[in-house]
Length: 532
Image (cartoon, rainbow, N blue to C red):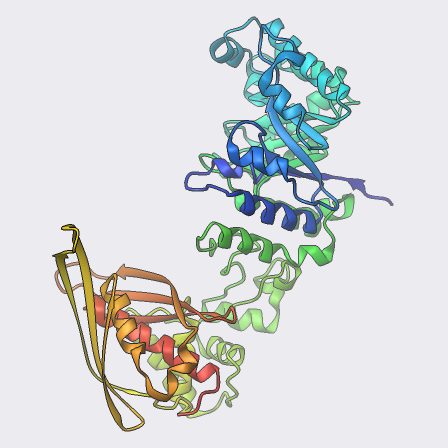
């Protein structure tokens, strides 16, 4: 039996750009658009030409898409003007896009209070605008803004708006849950009703995530008869975001009844790259991935409890609803105070450590891990520190250098311009291959200064550390009071694209930071095969 086609419409570059703290550059947009195109999406909405310089420039040098239809977004014409005499609409119509998506209000309340025009005039604006897109020989889409709220309040008017768009030639009529407040069962009922009244219209869904149900709302709409789904990567969008394509796509391809009923433009091979695509967006936005995001999060297939990890190693289906590899992710068996021997052995195997499970050192290592986590250490996100802890227990880590002492000072003083500046200076005394070294370094903070001092001269190891850099630094206060215990997580990277995390714990934040720093350096030396 042949499958019915579902179409995916990505709005990351417009809806996603409305996320607080997100500001795409032209190059960001180009890179994201090409990645989405490579995944096999059907439509990529590039933004609103003429609305801002970034979008205008992006459309002037559009990305070379191979499969997706490049789409421009805009509004239906304003009242009192013809479609051919509306400057804002003209900018959209004259863009390089193959498809044009126009938004228009379909709630009588919104028309009266926001547009302040007669209800029939709004319907006419919708129809004339869609006709203008058809005349331009572009594919017309109509975004029915506030449709579900409008339909619940005045179904006849909301329906009249979308019927006008359909009869004017709209290829897709997209029903928008603009404030994200409609429940999935309501969406199913309303979409089914609309489909029965307008059977020849191709319907889409555009759901916001204000009740954490945008994915569920989108699937309910598919059940009701829509055949286009709009969403964003990682669920970006204003307020609480939009329907998350990184969850929707795997659901459509791996879950029933969707997998056997529908097909989309994304192949199984490309589905295996969706985690990479999600992380690419986070990298462009310079933010850490959501660890607990379904399918693509670093912890989406993490099994921490000892009983869980034992079961999943015997039969992954026990606690995994799909295989991690199907979405380009991987199983993680973290080691913690809740873990058992099976967790530990799995983590050792992942780190490439070959040791007999009956080795007496394994029991001691497990107790050491549990004791250290009781003190505040966390190895779930500090894989490099865990590997060093394990290899030290097995006698595999050389003593590259011996720290004799360190100190750091912070001074606030005036510079040559008479402005106050803060200068940190770190001093580290250490021995390398029997040679005593006294290193001094400065930085824009205590940790930066200590890092500079420690790596200023590490003797024969200095060259191996030339490409090492710190890329993230996180502090968590574990206990309150003046003797609070502090946990520091440091993420490091090298010139080869490798990244690793280390952890330090102490009542002194500088001491905790220094422990994480030294672990980072030792891990790189050991991983790169540098001999002591």
